Length: 551
Image 1 (cartoon, rainbow, N blue to C red):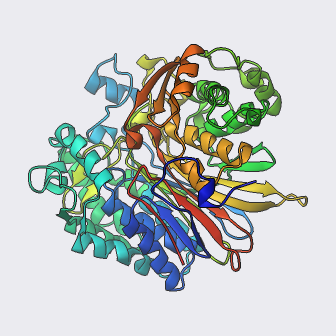
Image 2: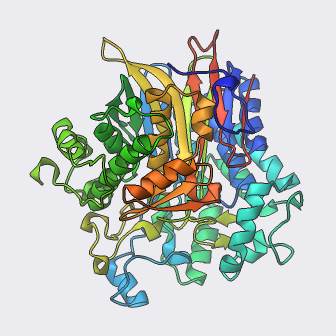
Image 3: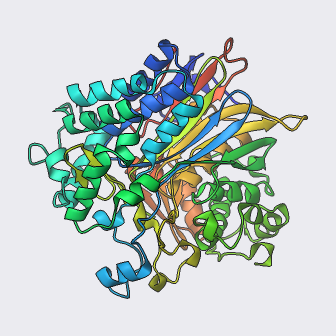
């Protein structure tokens, strides 16, 4: 049973759980307060989520911008809906396009520059959410972000450290120094920073309900900018983009159902790992014990082996999500976990057939029962590094998530015109199944950080559902991160005896001291009962500058 008291948290923490009937939790206080403001104006959780997301593009530009992609899960009080607002490859993008620019040995599109930029999907996601579920006018929901961009804000510590770390690598990318290094350097902690160009973009987005971004003045500026840098993004690419409503996928675990967005995202990795782990009694071990961590790591390795082999744009996949989540297949794969040693598994054959993060996550819930799980990202910290200066559009580098033939990696993920790349950002949701086939909403949650995301989902759910730890404790607890082979990073707070025990089992363990970069950051809202009466409890990860706020 979930523990809710602060005294039940065995880990050092700078955060306390927040109890309220209306809650917003994200990694910057100004953004959380913008969401609460929408709720006070009579808006719902979707209005709050969009307003929070818009402010986050301004106050945490190291992780997301107006040129990001996004995904969301929305519990509307009766059903759970999924939204895929990730972008597609420009029509000019083929393997030959990149081989001509990079050589035949290129393994993927480049990490930085315009040739890493797919069509930015995030704004289309905001609009789709607002049109289907929003209660307030879209322009009103954009207003807090416009104000923050115009007036500016003081730089917080975690954001500043990542900004400074990226400056040298990205200062030569087009538009980056002009927008993000206004004094010839990264801002310092507490220094006042403004984004007037982004304010102009937000005003145009607000005025046109996003049309300016894909067919109007912003689209024209983006195309001019791309062409000036030798990129392929065209007006046709932008105008053809649409966000898609999708059916979430799910996996049962310990009497609950865990929901994720289906491929092209990696949320299925968390579901596979949970499906494997369900065949082991994790709770017979202590939460921070060697054996509890080892079983989770080995399940995650098996999940990633299949995900990296098979997952891509679903139109190109040789298997379906149902194939990868088939109970008989997961039972067979679970037998491969050896409780006595670490392994480096290969992909299986269902049905007989890495990186630095740059992501923000937020969750919002209201007293009418609506809950939103939303994630948006530029990827790899500031994304492509390219910033259209007229409108301050910081562009993602999701094209780097494609493979090229020379890589010999998953052919379903090879670049092609109009295709979505393998994506790392994944919102999540937890429910209980009802006898009538419906679902009882329990928790809206997510953990940021590239391939740390499904690993964070797994670890926090095990702590909540197997060990009954409190929401804030599950957020604060030390984490591990599987890389490749036998390589595992662990957070400095992991008990020394656990680290030594993992090494004795054959894990190549490295202890790291950068929690933001390596171990993700989560936001959690757990429904306590009738939202209008008992409300929710929320937790915000201390690894970022965030806040869970409610009223």
